[in-house]
Image (cartoon, rainbow, N blue to C red; front, side, top):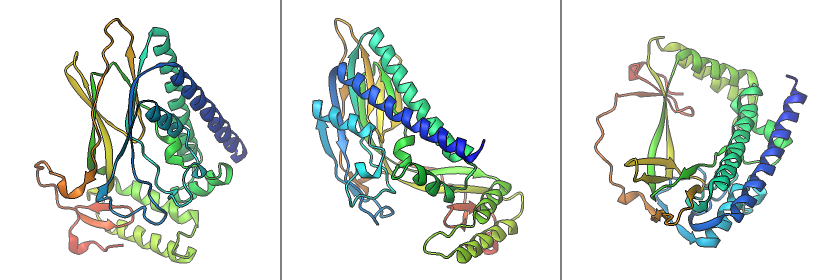
Length: 317
């Protein structure tokens, strides 16, 4: 596919996504709102994206005010939807839940629209991250040349729905993203970055290429059988714990966006019990016991790449 066709498909997909989000908002406004609760989190200022989040103060909203915030949040996809001093590198999160009483036809209509929105979000992400064939470093320029100011994480995040939950409670999760990778995969990724030929601030183009070349040599230096893992810390995230009484099952959901709970109308429709999201304080976190993990050594800091190869043989990049 030519670059021109790819850009056309990306723009068309995004336009359809905006229309579908508008349709979803209008549909939800027409449904019977049982209750709603969302939690506004502090905005992240420019330059503070990588600061540790030791404390997070939560501002709760309920009822119609919560629904209005949530529906607007679903459609906030661009930098200009945020404050002037708010970082564009950190997507705004709004955990919470909107609970609606629906009949069978309303339930079907809502599901179809949510699934259409999520399909378009996945298609947009696939166009940008896979079909474009661009290295991670090149995607920002590609997207912002044609969809200026788009916050891609906001655009990619899917909307989750719940069917007849009995309760929805909220909390915080600390975790790492851990992924096993092969030596060949890492070398292919680094080679792609090298061939992209871009500068990455604060480095000049030549300095950046020297850094990537050194990283390639570091990876080549380890044995082919060595274990390689990406172990990337993720900032504390809001989560929802959803309880279903009939199945005696609890399901945990990441909750960067408000969940949509669809409760089938009946003479004794059950209104879900909703919990609060308390302020986060890292000093108050109690860690459960975890078995001691395998000792790993940092190989490439910027990629959070670790190896089990002997520490005295690893050259830190």
